[in-house]
Image (cartoon, rainbow, N blue to C red; front, side):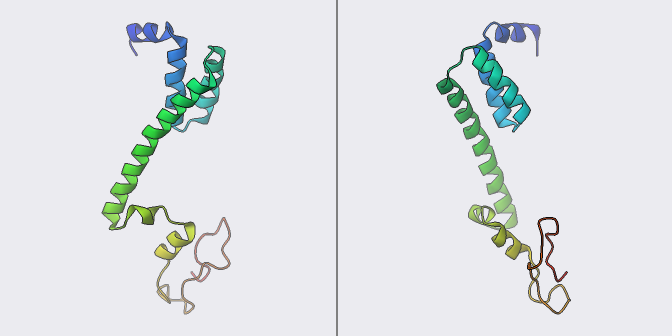
Length: 122
């Protein structure tokens, strides 16, 4: 950042912290959010002002995420709703067809753990 831009932002700490807080939300940086939240509160920003900044950041981030899902759906030949399915729907879509894995038992997710997410027959 140039000195001119930095000195301009530094002259208005409330604006600086609103921008930084929104950027923290947009980049999913928890440590940044915590730090800038404290600075924003110390600068005198009200809860409503902080909520507005967070809502704007979430809207921007949500639009980006939605468009990425739409692109992925187009490339995969699926609907965007299919990408928002449950884990069971994802597992079913990715599971081999009956006996496709060659074990004679068909694909089964039974017996899996959080660490072992592969079907138990494979």
